[in-house]
Length: 284
Image (cartoon, rainbow, N blue to C red; front, side, top):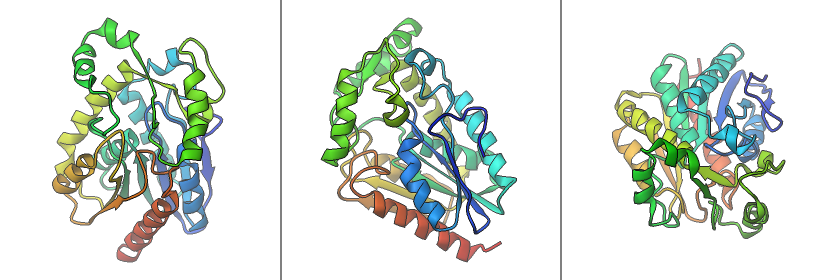
């Protein structure tokens, strides 16, 4: 199963239990960051779909054109495609993808069986974020500036595991903003355009308003040492979401990219436990 926005690293794994999970990667990211989790979920019986987000895994110029509304439209199509194939469908994502799963729950409450929010990000307030972020938030209101500035991804790249981090670093350090590299399909963009950061900001404000109205079961997983976005983001959701069925897991040995970092197996196990428990509570 693919959609119009699918790319080389998109994937669909057909399951055996009649239940589906839509996985959503982060903004400027790639489905590769969700593939390990997807395989683990599929092994547990779930059908799993993760498509490349619109304009991602392409040139930087193309990435800079994307809007949060365009991303939502593609995710909604993917979610509804899954509902046509599966008895129950869950949505999960990392970073902005986690917020997108929450937004889907707010927009499609009757169809949403549950939410998996991995390192959800309203604000980039992690310990490794440059202290000049406040100046960027002023600059992005100027169209010329936000369309011109490309922020190079920097150490530790959201990854605590040294071997994995070094693979990213070798590519990110040599990449040029004026060229397209096939490695983007695997590692995501080496740059975070200010205009994409602005779209994230606009979308986060929408989701923050919606959270009290969301009643779907939710699993939140966040790293205590998240370098990009502090656990305050997950704490806020846990404290304000309308759902009574909510779980917050704090990891002790990972940074932001928890689906590929040192505790990726624990992340997968927690997600599977959440889904299986949700099925026990609501088998039909």
